[in-house]
Length: 285
Image (cartoon, rainbow, N blue to C red):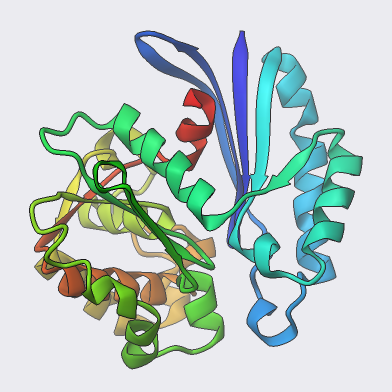
């Protein structure tokens, strides 16, 4: 029996098909498609028709895969961009009609809960973590042991679209300042495209390798060095950097800047990157 998890995010749509038993997950198939439905949202308040169409077509395209892997259980979730868009409800209704699957718009808190499950199941840590899910439109912070969850309206796509500088981002992350003492002893685990890209760039991966990225640690100094490299590299050349997907090249600077500010606010000198996140959390839940 196979399970499928589908995430319609602000930057991309993602699919995970896996088997599950008491020993863990066995990944059968993974796919990611950059659809950028969060693009222009801060200006128009709407998901653009072209971006919506890219997402709908992708949902149609993966249907044969679900049949081929005999998927019996699945869940399709939409996150930050769809939550906020004035036409978000119409978007998921059309997505459901064309894919023949119900699509849920989940809250930031539910998004964080699922990401935490993915991390908890995927990483063997000595101490419970503070998990940060840095996405395209929002960033979630969650720690089950402290019964703590918060979703903030800042992410790599949103910060890029709004041309946010460090002060703008820091203002949106202001609630994080009060978290420093509370989570001093908690390892900082980050999930999402920015975190995995940081690890991938550090490792110089020409082809993404989940096993190498998962559990990899990136220090604050290494993060700063990568940020300087990105800032000093024109977009056309940035797209060719080892470890950086060309589709992410225009938003990665903002994502790394957000990461540095979070590390500074929490006084953390490193992050642990988890490649097990929301998708795995959906399957485990």
